[in-house]
Amino acid sequence: MRSTLARLSSDPPMTEPLLKVEDLSVTFTAAGTTTHAVRNISFDINKGETVALVGESGSGKSVSALSVLKLLPYPPASHPSGRIVFEGQDLLTASERELRGVRGNDVTMIFQEPMTSLNPLHTIERQIGEILSLHGHLGEDGGHSRIIELLNQVGIRDPEKRLGAFPHQLSGGQRQRVMIAMSLANEPKLLIADEPTTALDVTVQAQILELLNKLKADKGLSMLFITHDLGIVRKFADRVCVMTQGEIVETGATADIFDNPQHDYTKHLLAAEPKGEPPAHDENAEIIMQGDDIKVWFPIKKGFMRKTVDHVKAVDGIDLKLRAGQTLGVVGESGSGKTTLGLALTRMISSQGKIAFVGKDIDSYSFNEMKPLRSEMQIVFQDPYGSLSPRMSVAEIIAEGLHIHKPGQTFEQIDATVSSVLEEVGLDPETRHRYPHEFSGGQRQRMAIARAMVLEPKFVMLDEPTSALDMSVQAQVVELLLRLQEQRNLAYLFISHDLKVVRALANEVIVMRLGKVVEQGPSRQIFDEPRDDYTKALMAAAFDLATAPAGIVNQ
Image 1 (cartoon, rainbow, N blue to C red):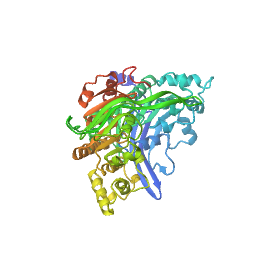
Image 2 (spheres, rainbow, N blue to C red):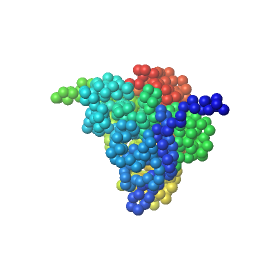
Image 3 (tube, rainbow, N blue to C red):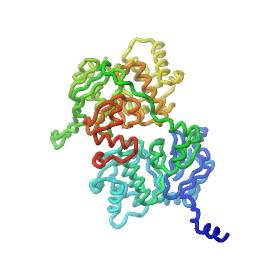
Image 4 (cartoon, rainbow, N blue to C red):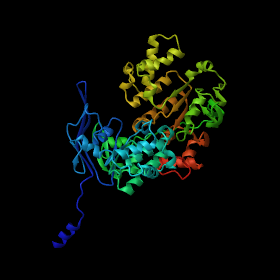
């Protein structure tokens, strides 16, 4: 008995979680209607632990995270039940003065889109300095040395040269690093990261995650990581809470959740990666679009006379062929020239080099000469909400192209065509008189695809059409695009930095970097046996979340 008591007394005492969320509910009340965004959720985070909150858009992840620091608009937001206890203090009942002592000091937050989170009118030095100033950590030199130290910590090269930079002068990865520096300025105990890598290229994403892991190890930082990307969660989180419709339906150690999911929704998420077989390569298929030595150079002008001193070579001598029923995937990081190449091929911007569409040389066509061909070459953009007019109904949006390119049809004929194409893309034709804001992101992207397909094109440029979508919706859109391609024998130019989606869709791939092609060939060869170091870095970042080799990716 004595030995047992001695052993028990030597065990380390049980420690309280750093953050404990108990029975939390969040409602929004507007115009007499109450929406239950979060329903009685509970979870905790221990010191030095990363807990991932995963789920699709609308599941309540971000609302739960914003509740921790009481950053929701009160009203219309309210908490019918729950406690949020941080180091023994209930933040839901804390005064505004007490919360100011916690926010930005003990608990900080990184938001999804750094460009909208950073002040466009202030320099980087001023924005980081403001965080230090508010919490009294400026020091004798006005925080200058601390700011440089923070920028060094987050991997900004030559930080002294970046102090006077404005957000628009930095890349997406650099802006996100600045946001992390601001979050770490006062050495917090808990970092809340709300989709911090969603808008980033795969290599930059891998670098940001490696950075967060290093900071966690060096400083004992705890993290609440919010994401819909399960690939990140698997490599990054210690524990996972799966959310849907405002409820946590499953929670557990990351390995247990991935290896032995219990809830049907968790199984649904894990099975939601884009699948499908791209069309078989067919050298005999009709060439729909061909580009030879395509160049798009933007002049750099300086001096009083605005003399051209150099050029930004956005696209620099690219050859390609797109065939009927085939998909050419164009991959590379932001700024590599992917979208510029697509806009040049569709004659949306001027370019040099030969461009042929269905055998016709169109590189010298004027705006008016291109008009008859516009119905045969269509574009589906990245953000459906931004590309669909909020003032027009779904029927009006889809019918607009018919009025322009196929005039003379009766209202009944147009309405029947609109209903038919909506049904083809998996939308209920009865909803055609509603407006875009009444639909989900995936439904809006289907509308954008319907708008393109209603004109029966031969060629479709797909510019990051799935990057803003949840993984399960991505998979549905990929399946839809493959089905439409097979039915209509369409030629796709698929532009993306999401290599998993490209692998499911494209039978040939071009890898671009700084306006040039670094590797080109069949999809299987590019993905399974990449030859160029840059391609290898992209593949490692996309499929292993490993950091790119030194010198390959410049931040």
